[in-house]
Every structure is written in structure tokens, then in C-alpha cells.
Image (cartoon, rainbow over all chains, first blue to last red; front, side, top):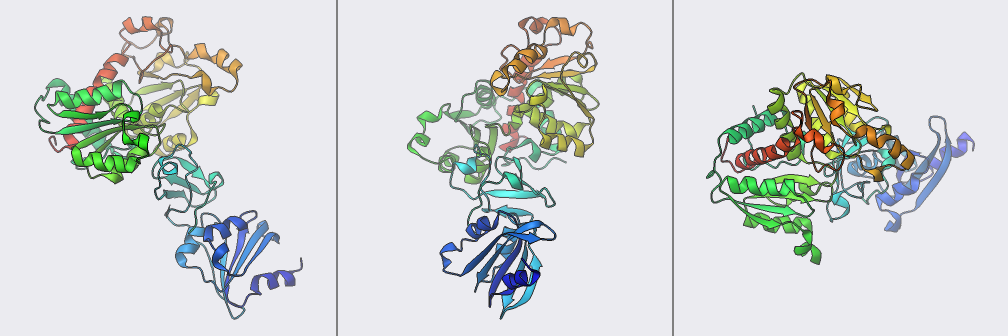
Length: 157
Length: 307
């Protein structure tokens, strides 16, 4: 892919959000997590795109949707290196990184099958105890500590 | 200063500060010396045991009764509406309206935390799956202090299944407050999990890992034995090779320190040979008895009848 083509991929929506630098393989999880499949928004997905920094990366573009700060920060646990580009009239008007929050509520399912949260219908709560690689989260209920790779399921926002 | 105990929950040993722990031990010590048969008159404890237990349930219930309180509850989830599909949350919310304090054991991890969100009444975690069992840790600390007259500057060996044993996890987490030297003795596959080792490292206490106890046993003040379960081994040959090295026998005790004491959360199966019971080093039955005083202390404190 030429650099020119790549630029085109990122900026070729009129209005909306481009989530760039998603870890390769996680784009579909991001879409599921944002719960936008049924929204009738036009979504473009790039998988395994070449990246100087990451080697390869995924990318998601959503037309006519501006993500809220909460959605972006919630997304950080799933795509910690992501860059969010807000597009207006084909131009990037805002560009920022997702900020990993101190805690996440109802974002991930506890990977511990014996955790009470997997057996009763309650909101999961995790503290982020390490914000740098490897990101580590601690379940407020079963007190188990997990790395990002351990997370099997993300809930919808 | 310890935090106010009245109406507090006891969910995890990590919720308790060093001064909280020392205060509970002090109150338990007082109750062991001087019983208070009328302290909790008119109070009711629900003993909600969703899973089997002998010592924990009976010592909670006896603790309440010996302080003059009353006990209601169940020792088997099959007799509750959980069988009909009622959630733990609803069950505890309702029981909380009947009683003053709830002692809970549940097979799922985090159950006690959820229960504490369902009711304003104090919840005492009597074991939530493989997660926490804080009253066991408190009675372990009480027992260590009782037999060694101190909690600091001790050499303590934790022996057996350190990977899956919740009592040794909680005990190690609590001992970081007291500057002990820890010897972690376990087969490699059953060594202490990394998150506990991280806590030990962060606290700066000295610890080392070993595959057999012979080289360590003569220099420690406390040997804390736990059971190694055969089903934890994927390699049965490995189990056969190691199983005997984690059985404590009288012949191991020839050169130990005079004041060394052996502890075990019980039930034991074969990891402490019965002839060890008769030696002055055996302290596990006294340890189990101490559960009564520690649980009395917790009940008195949470119900606001002791300061």
C-alpha cells in the first residue's frame, strides 16, 4: 500500500470518527464493543494495515458518529494505543489518544469463570492497576488480576 | 488508629490495615482471657453457608452463642430459594432485614463482596471460593502471636500447595505488615502465584522459594503446613516423586528450634503424621480453637458492642 493510499483510507470520510492504531486483530472487537453494527452508520474496517510503529494495525472508520469522551476512554482498555481522529468536512479537526482510566465499570466480563459476576446479573467493576504494558486489571469482586490478553469478552458500551 | 468497626464488612484481608488487624487480635486476646457471655444478648447472626464447612461454621455459630447472641441460618444451599433460582443478591437483601450480622460462605469468588452490596448489615466473609477467608488469616495471626509472643522478626515457612491454597495467599498478604522472613516451600508447579510474589516484593519483606523443607525446617519459628492435592498435578510421576517430601514426620523435628510451632488450617489428610500431634511443636488444634475468639472479637466489634 502506498502512503498516498493509506492517507486516503484515514481521511476519506466526510464526517465521523476514525479509530487508528488498533492492535491488529482487534478491530471487530472494537466495533462490537461500540455497539454500532445495528446503528446503520457506514463503517469501514481495515485489517492488518502496515504500520511503521506497530508493524501492522487495524483501523475503523465510522461515518456521522462522534464518539463521546467516555466511549473513547472505555475503549482504551481494548485498544490502548489507539488514536482517535474526529473528522469534519473531510478534515481531521481533533486527534487524540484514548486515556486509560483508573477503573472500568461494565466494560469487560471477568475472565474468571468462578467469579460471582459471571453467575449473577451485576455490573462488573475493575481497577486498572497497571496502565502501561502489560495493562493489568483487578476484579473488585473476585480480586483476581488479569492482563489485557486474558480478557475474553468485552461488553457493549 | 484502627478504623471504626461498627457496621463494617470483613470481606478481604487486604481491606484491613495493620492497626485494624492488631486491634482485632487484642480484642480476641481479651475475650480468650475473659469470656463475655452476655455481650451480644438480643442480637441475631445469620449463618449462611452455601458450601460445606465444619470449623468455620461451627466456630462462627459458637462464637455468637457464647457471647449470648442467637443464630439462624442454613448450612446447605439446597434448602434455600437459591434452588428455585433466587439470586444471592436477593437472598442476602432479605436475610439482612431479619438479622443483625451475616456470616457467609459461598463457592463463588466475590460472593461476599456482592452480598455486602445487597445489605447494610455487616457481612463477614467465611470463605468465597478460592478467593478470601479473612477470619482464617486473623486466627492464624492470633495463633502465631500467641505461641511466639510476637508477630515481627519471625521466620515463617509456608509449605505445600501455595498456588491454589487461599489461606496461604491471605496469610502472606497479611504478614507483609509485620516484617517477617518467609520461606515458600512447594513443588515448582505449586509455587506462590506471581501476584502474591509482587505484593511481597513491593513490601520489601525477605522471602525465598524452595522445593523441599529439610534445609529450612531447623531455622524457622513457624511451619505452616497445607495439603497437596494429587489432582493438581498433570504429571502423576511428579506427584509420586514429591508427595512424601511434603509430609511432616517426627523424624523431621529432631533439630528444630525448641520454640518452633507447627500450624495447619485443617482439615489435614496425611501431610502431618499423627505422631507429630503429641510433640510440643504441634499447635494446629489450638489454632482451630482460636478461631472462636477471633470470630467473637469480630462479631463484638461489628455489632458495636466492643471498641
